[in-house]
Amino acid sequence: MPAALALSPHLDDAAFSCGGTLALLARAGWRVTMATLFTGSVADPTGFALACQTDKGLGPEVDYMALRRDEDRDAAQALGIAPPRHLPFREAPHRGYASAPELFAEVRSDDGIVPDLTRALADLIAETAPDLILAPQAVGGHVDHIQAVRALMELAPAIPILWWRDFPYTVRDAAPREPLRDRFADLPVQTIAFDADAQEAKRAACAAYASQLGFQFGGADNLTAQLAREGGVERFHRGGALPTGLARLFGDAG
Image 1 (tube, helix red, strand yellow):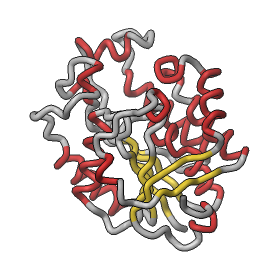
Image 2 (cartoon, rainbow, N blue to C red; image 1 turned 60 degrees about the horizontal axis):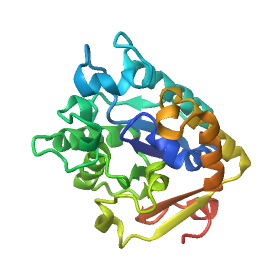
Image 3 (cartoon, rainbow, N blue to C red; image 1 turned 30 degrees about the vertical axis):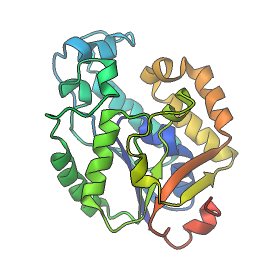
């Protein structure tokens, strides 16, 4: 059975950005795994890290990341894919980034997480043996997305990669930040359209992240409307040749 591995910085990024593609792969008989890098719980968060959950109506007694890991399991089930994998790295607010603007500014000079991420990705790829990797381009410029891209590029696996356009950052601004644009500029574009069943699977998976819907979309109804505007299409830059059979499943590039 062929295998695909989606490398998600946060607990929602893969479903938001390539959930339709993951649903298509699963329906075609692939073993599909979402692995999220930054999922570690932190006891007694304070300051900005605590505010990241209290501003969503979750009190300080709530294990925010445990709640989000549960949402991720529900999302994977909605997509019809394997149970998700959760790596224990801490999100940026627990690594010294002390405000929302800092999350989208330059990577801190003392944020030395890339070597550890690279080693963890090497172990994960060796274990899951994917024929295809899906990963972010860091559109929007979130530092966790940037560090995830840097780690995967440092590893440089000899496996084709579909680099997704990070949704909903792609639609928040007419010209979203793309700090790593030059790394993808020479790669061909792969456009993947998916049918109504896969669109509904993606919608249900995205809706599973209930703690994020108000913050990201203004609620479940707006999520549904925004996904409808996307028109059942996901766009990638493609690194390497697609495995046999996928070109037919995904259609022509471009």
